[in-house]
Image 1 (cartoon, rainbow, N blue to C red):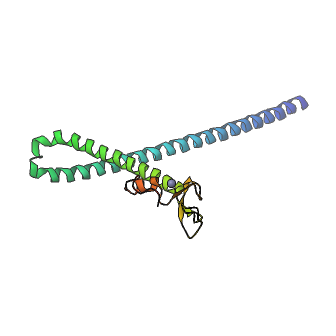
Image 2: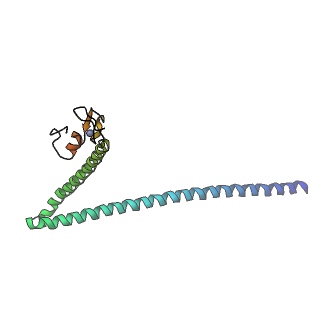
Image 3: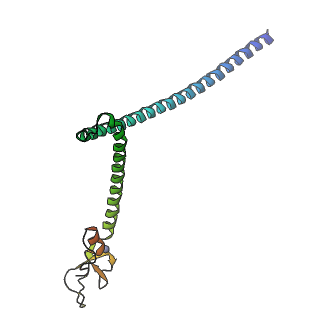
Amino acid sequence: MIPEQETYQQQLTRMRDEALTRAVRAERDVRAAEDELGKRRRQVAELIEQRDRAQAGAQERAVILEHARDLLEPWGGHGDSWPDIAPAIEELISEARRQTTRAVQAEARIAAVQELHRPVDGLGYHEDGRYEGDRLACSTCGTPDEYATWWPCPTMRTLDGADATAGAQP
Ligand SMILES: [Zn+2]
């Protein structure tokens, strides 16, 4: 009978559509679960990394503290007094690290200054007006002629630890 056959066909179509919808939904759920799993994995990896860093830091501190304790033992820094001394040593270590940072920054600034003040050809100018021979001038202080600042300039002499005002011009 045709109406029942049509109904059966429609039923099959509906079931197929429902199955397809379920399949699409399941695929989406799997993808979401995979994303979530990936996120969790990354979080775990991050936590492991943080733990390792913390452990490395703790180990470093422990080694330094042990060393400090050994050094302090001859002066009576042991036994019951040790817990009182430990924070002071931690503070000294922090201060040493801050000083290292400042030293590195200072080195970088000195390098920048040295980059600016370099010896260049002073065009052989002499104070009596002659242009003769070789004479070096600073690349930044003055110009390489009668207005030159002869090398080494006061800035570089200061950097080298010399008195910048002594014998400024040759
Ligand atoms: Zn200079």
